[in-house]
Length: 155
Length: 121
Image 1 (cartoon, helix red, strand yellow):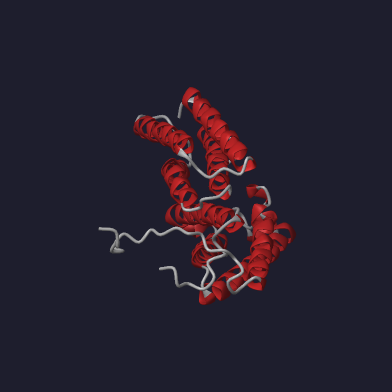
Image 2 (cartoon, chains in turn purple, yellow; image 1 turned 135 degrees about the vertical axis):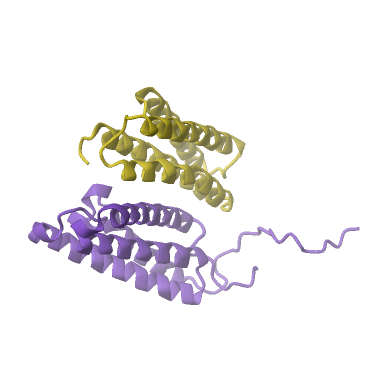
């Protein structure tokens, strides 16, 4: 389990980042679930956007938590799409409010969530960039051996 | 939803957040006190869920009860998730995760009160 090259996206400050991402995955997912389950016909576009946002947050959370090479690419893509989404939806929701009768996570640049949705992808991308510069064995591995089945040599 | 219980939950979560922030500040990893605080918080949240469902099944409750139930159940996930994720990190960022989790609980409780009272939905 310890042969993963760079687990650094999830350790240290990255652990906080993943926690906040998980929180938003939960928030966006619950919101989308309630909206689609109870009142989908009222504003299908806004509610589908909520669902898309939820999927992207889940993707970013999982990718940042794994932190392998492929996960890193997925995380970069998710954060980029997220940034684009919050900017486009934020602008549209202010410019053409009638298209968004009900709020999504990204409405008003994430105003309903303390603008965290606007800041989060930027921090995510900066974090991914910084941890990618220190790839290789520079980051000291945390010596946690949680493998239960390791046969101990002490008799 | 009762205001007294909500107030207690908010106070406990803010205290736990403050304690965890202090731990992170002093560069300590997560320990037993953090787990106890999260355990207390979880018990309070379960109590709230039970009280909430009893009240909803009686005729009390907000207009958008689906959203309220969503909060009522989703908030139960946060203390255990925070504990698990924080324990894996043996550094100051373990308690840091608990700060995030506890603040999230406090914010969600405030939001639930707003939904319950039908303001700012």
